[in-house]
Image 1 (spheres, helix red, strand yellow):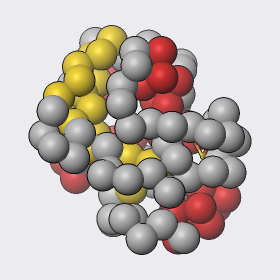
Image 2 (tube, rainbow, N blue to C red):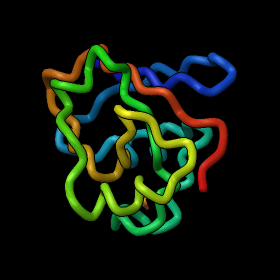
Image 3 (cartoon, rainbow, N blue to C red):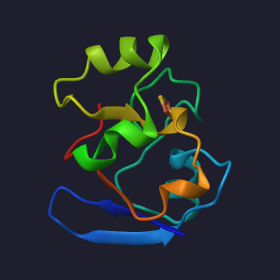
Image 4 (cartoon, helix red, strand yellow):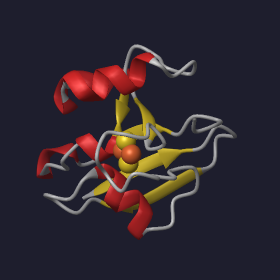
Length: 105
Ligand code: FES
């Protein structure tokens, strides 16, 4: 079970998907570049922003209210943007692909 983080430059980081962990934690644990996670997962900093591959957006679900507030302030926000700290990895996300934006806020 893996998840792929794709950098702005197109570099792929394929890492094990640990069920029940936040996607942010998985990125940090595997030293994926570009996920700063300054607030430690409180949906309060916006520096764990990822853009979910549109094919996966339905399956991983939409952003919640506090997450939406943070995303609304982000100029790099796209329709499938999420805060990865608010995404709890599920076993059926095997093969998930997310893009890491060029800059975190
Ligand atoms: Fe701060 Fe996700 S880690 S918003």
